[in-house]
Length: 135
Ligand SMILES: [Zn+2]
Image 1 (cartoon, rainbow, N blue to C red):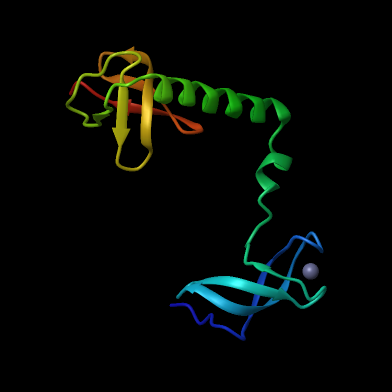
Image 2 (image 1 turned 135 degrees about the horizontal axis):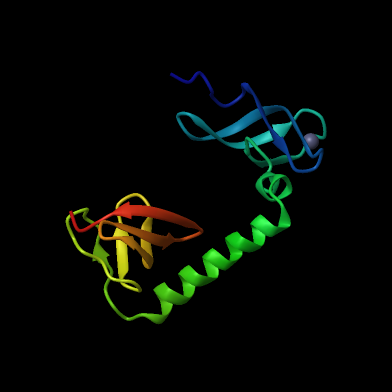
């Protein structure tokens, strides 16, 4: 249960103050998520954000960021270049390298490697997952 509503205070990230500060909720996006908030410190009204969006980049090394970019590029190349319809993922289906795959949680991806007879490495948008196949 959430007791957030317009007019109440919420701790969120302020882009101007660059800190997590108390904000007043102006409007709710849905029952549990504030939409717009006003910073009590600088009075700026902006979209509610729990954490700064750049946080991930600053904690991970630039090498990691590059690797993530490479994964995203590889994904974009594979998914955009192919005119094939992605095959719905099922652990019982046998997948081949470079085959397009669509997963209920991860979305569209491409088979990067056949690890062994029943494991494949799949590149999804910005992430690599090992999935079971050919069961
Ligand atoms: Zn502020």
